[in-house]
View 1 (cartoon, helix red, strand yellow):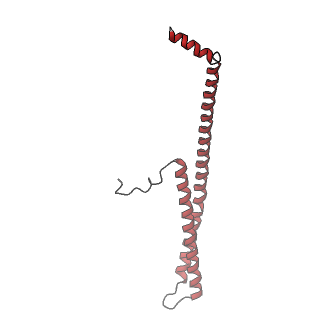
View 2: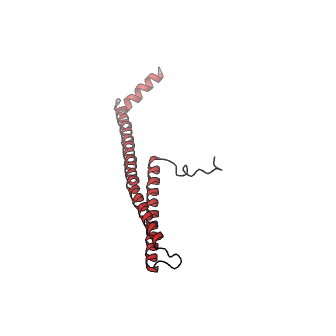
View 3: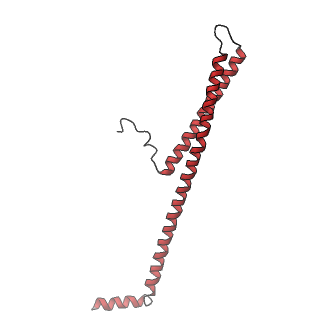
Length: 138
């Protein structure tokens, strides 16, 4: 009986139950804020994934072009190399420089592609060390 009377007194002290309403409103507002933060986080992650995926696709194209340039430069190098005193040194040097430039461009293209892939993996939440499994780790 005392507990019922005490409960009643506490209810009346909290503005005739209005204190409960405002406490519920505060709790509801906090829940809504948490939901909005969750949605904002999901949107950010989705945007990062879409951007990273488009970068992977974009970085894939120059690799093929660079591979073709390396093949052409190798053919030119093979035609212009000096064998047994045959061939012109200037043409050989130009073909060697073209091959060097083509290989550097290919390396840059592959590196850019790898960085884009890593960013995509990171955006997807994949651990960066999972791709580098060593025999000792297994």
